[in-house]
Image (tube, rainbow, N blue to C red; front, side, top):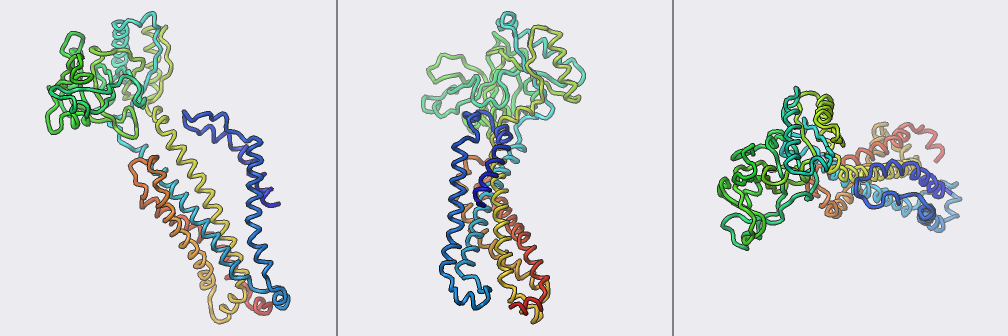
Length: 479
């Protein structure tokens, strides 16, 4: 009856909270609309509750079948609980503690991963950036020259606005991954087939003048692109630090040339004029090798503007909308928002993983707490006579409280040791989900063990308090 009632209550809670959980799902998770509490879930839950009832009732039933009835009646029904029963209870509590430590340690790993991702240095200053997403009429701006003139006009008007430090078009949205214009293969001048095959696949960014200054990307060597890098001028390129280190290890990349494709490719050579700091513009988890090309010599199909603000972001966002509308009312502004909004996409899955496992960890902690409390409360009731004799022989209330709490700590210690061993074994499962943190992270493991010990102390405190307040004379008369 208890198990079925608990199962029905669990179904009600699941149905009530399901909408909130689905709302937290990260993008691109397949078929979230198919997640629902249906008849299959209902019968599965009832079957699970029935199985739990059978398992929970089996051990007491077997233990009671072996009770010496004569001795039990002779003692007035106050016979000692069989040792196997006491050990079984403690074993179940230890198993609960083991499970709780494993799950809480995993939740700690994923939480620390989320915190590291939020604090990672992206290689550029994103806190004062505003993004303006545009939809341009194809009939007006399908021509590259007209498209480029429009972008130049918008940038000039925005840069002339008080509170705006810089503005630049961008061709690829932040954290777009490996999509967009990318270069799967490049060849540096002087490389043969084998050496060229070892070159990294590059993210390819087509950038306008002011790009590096607006985004706050540091040029560690050389120069940024200018208006001189236009059609007909010598073709230029800027590479990120990791590209320079892999393609020209130990050499100065400035003045070197590279091209798309293999050594036999007929693509034009581009001269490296600068080296930029590696960034996490495409992917938050890791910087990607990047090749920057001037939009005037490559592609100027940007549909987004990035604005660096000195004034409050809300005012700059209103100014950006107004300037676009003044230039051409036919241009549709799809959205104006802080750059940091883009962080929601790469952080969505780590945030959901940490939340979900944290929820499981909280449930495991609650179960372990209930288990420790139940065992300690039962232990105190069974040791009334022993406690009365200890007090009669001079034990203080503090001694009695410590007697009970120490037993709870022993259970917590054994369970935590097993939990840490289990966490060490299962930590490899989390390896692909972690960022800048090792699966055997000491802080996460130690934190889980200390949290479990604290919970066990709290769960033991109430039985210990009751034990310390026993009326000794009444207990000794009864026994």
